[in-house]
Length: 262
Image 1 (cartoon, rainbow, N blue to C red):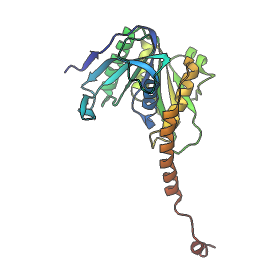
Image 2: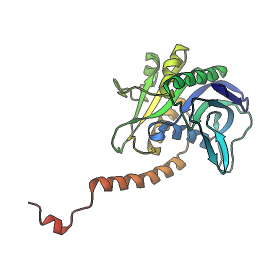
Image 3: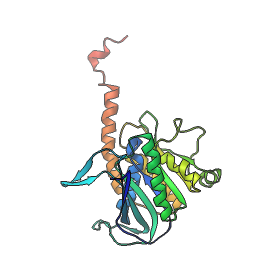
Image 4: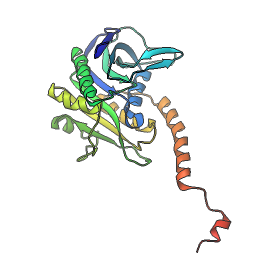
């Protein structure tokens, strides 16, 4: 296999779609958000990107194996996906080019070369703007979720400032992986790009943070999406969070325990 192999599955009609990237990261925020778009809107798988920079493994679903890869989907925001529908597999007029997958590159060189390949594919579809989605760790469980932004130009910051919170020198460690490199390397190619990062503890898969990011993206791109499935996942995670908090606090003192305080 070559360093990168691209498998073309379909060639839908697209007119300068917006690139949305959601790969695994902190709290799986970006991945959850991108996959939710695929669950909610009519979409077509258009290509798979294979690379020797991915882990040497296959995923398995219902016994069927799939070599590690990234997938590009064309998404039509005007057509919600009905519960009884699957991916159409047909060419559609696409508003978004959504990139998702189960892996990022395993090394620094791989991150750069992988991002270069992603930008090549984006250029083929005349992508002029990109939003990368991810999480920013707070190190503690949180109740209210803010979305922090970073962008490749001062003009884009000004455009998004009413919707996204831009903080000085945050996130402190910068943006690691494809989500950050698409901004840095994209700027060198003339691509307007911004990263939307939902605050998250960093300890758990965080559907609430993914929803907060999508709500911001809704405002920016002017579309509407339902959140029922994300809310169900959030309820499941809330049960986990409750148990964690109970463990942190320890058992409540009994009357006998209180007699020895003082």
